[in-house]
Image (cartoon, rainbow, N blue to C red; front, side, top):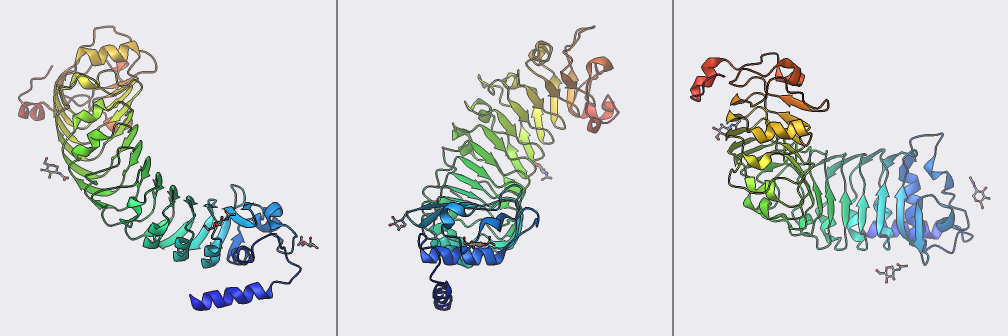
Amino acid sequence: MATLILVLQLLILLIPPSLPQNLHPSDLTALLSIKATLTDLSPTNPFFSTWNLTAPDPCSSFAGLTCTLHRVTALSLGAPSFPLAGTLPASLSLLTNLTQLLLSPGLVTGPIPLQLAQLTNLRVLSLPSNRLTGPIPTALSALRHLHTLDLSCNQLSGSVPPTLTDLPQLKILILASNSLSGTLPKTVNSPLLHLDLKDNKIRGPLPSSLPSSLRYLSLSQNLMWGPLPNGLQLLSELAFLDLSMNRFAGPMPAQLFSLPALSNIFLQRNNLSGGLGSGLRTGPVPGSIVDLSHNSLSGELSSVLEGVESLFLNNNRFAGEVPEAYVKSVWRGSTRLLYLQHNYLTGIPLQEGVVLPDAASLCVSYNCMVPPPAVVMTCPASAGGVVTRPAAQCSVFGNTRG
Ligand SMILES: *[C@@H]1O[C@H](CO)[C@@H](O)[C@H](O)[C@H]1NC(C)=O
Ligand SMILES: *[C@@H]1O[C@H](CO)[C@@H](O)[C@H](O)[C@H]1NC(C)=O
Ligand SMILES: *[C@@H]1O[C@H](CO)[C@@H](O)[C@H](O)[C@H]1NC(C)=O
């Protein structure tokens, strides 16, 4: 650290006296090292072309810079058509008045400098879609004012520092599409609105306590297991829930369907079991998408999911007759997609000659029934060509064909 300061002081001394006086010298030093370690990917579109370090007023002439009273307060490195490569310099930490640090998608490599933890005024730290490696520095938990942290689509490894999810101002945490492993803390205390950790290698159970402010939660495509905690049913602001493609098991917490704001429920490809909560009065809000496919759900289709706009219940162990209300909802157009293939359903009350709306997709193949006429069925290729489940499999459930 001491040597770093010495080097930086030297650098400051080396800056010719004719240099801009309207920018704090340590900020100018930081900008010099940023220009030295980050490079333009596109020679025809150089982001740094405006970064002329002998220009009289960097604050008004440099791309991506916002200043207040001679201090850099916001920095956007690169832009959509001006991607960068290279590495992030440790001397970014000299920009002590920075409240926003943004890096555009590009090919920036190397670690997230630990020294960023010294930028205690930071509210937004957004470094998505580059090639950053190494861990998320635990030291970032010193950023008490941090509101948004987006490190998605990099190559970060190690675990999510548990102190990060305790930051008192953190609202948006996006760490999706990295190689993060380890488990999540038992409780998340930050007042999060948006938590996206999808497409990582996170193991273990869901936190048993999540902030009641959450509106968006995605932990899809990880290696998480255990039951879905009752705490999920307390998230009254939740609008989007994606826990698909994990190893969650145990009963489906059907009270989820009654959450007042929840309109996107993705729980497919887990090992959830049990029924759909037949005692519930209110189902998902109009226009909802509910995907429970590829689980081990059983019992009869309950009225709670009547009228869901896109309903994927395929590849489970549902039995009994499809309720008439489900079919009416397709016929009326409130349900646009109803996938029931690969279950043990014994019948569907479709009147002969019924015409479903053109936009409707209904699939009931591979169940324990004589399938409805091909003309009313719209199955995905993954449903396979077999329209009826072999009778021997159906009798296991005590069902009769037809
Ligand atoms: C940088 O700015 C100085 C002073 O305004 C000017 O003389 C010089 O030509 C500029 N250099 C480039 C590469 O634009
Ligand atoms: C820079 O930060 C210091 C300490 O946090 C603060 O006192 C000062 O007002 C800030 N200056 C600007 C221009 O934001
Ligand atoms: C799914 O859960 C059942 C118990 O409900 C268990 O017997 C089975 O092994 C689980 N399957 C997987 C792939 O975890």
